[in-house]
Length: 356
Image 1 (cartoon, rainbow, N blue to C red):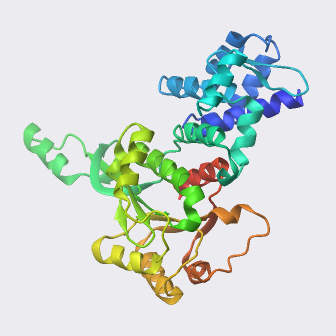
Image 2: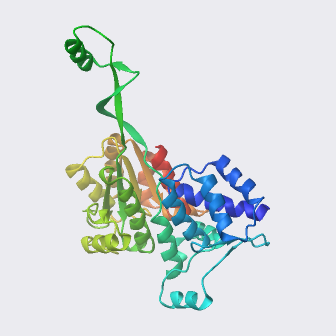
């Protein structure tokens, strides 16, 4: 039963990353349902999860995609064996052909959980493709901020204009009308380091950026940084991740070069603004420019931003210490220093953006 619970927990985490509000109570209901079902029957597992974990029509396509990705295909079954893996319903020969062609094989539950925590720089091509597929389903929503616009409401501040208009129309004050501020997704400005030291992570970070842009197109801006500052938001708006990455790659002129983040942030602050935004810098902090310049620009940026987050791939290791010149210059101005090396780390970062 412990292995079954672990498998269900991993699946629920995958659903949450995709935007399905599968809380602990729903996960517990699924376990109770599976206790009365034959978990070796794929359809019973599928419908038990769908009926207990989904709360509305919008959840159904996300549930189907996650079920297929996590359990290795539309038809999958939980096993009560000690390994508690998921039976693959694809022939071994077909699976071998996919691997020869470089296509990612569907992940079992245990394999998907392992991939969530592995460093993407150490994955095989097939494993990285699987992580990218799961990353494309990432959708945590976005923290909101109060807008200047108003909407009618039953309670709240008095709406004098609507109240006066209704009074003039009816000839008397029939009732007082109220209004409240609307909310908007908080803007995210993401800087992705594409220098040589970040080459093992750059593609996956751009996949993460694509997921952010697709979830909130009007509230997300993405820039590549290396030796030049390049806006790639437009390229990442394409629906297909592969096409978006190809277009972004063609737009970036400084792949695998050095990092002059201080100069690029200064250019950004001259031409753009991060006022009220959540600023995310994805870099390992190997600054070739003057660290003092980087610190000065981060100080300016921090005064504009709602929150400053730095995602460093090396932060995912216990013995990591921010000793590089770039990181030492950045630390005083950061609200969060988080890992940026695995799917689980990107899920955590997405969670922070949803509640910042």
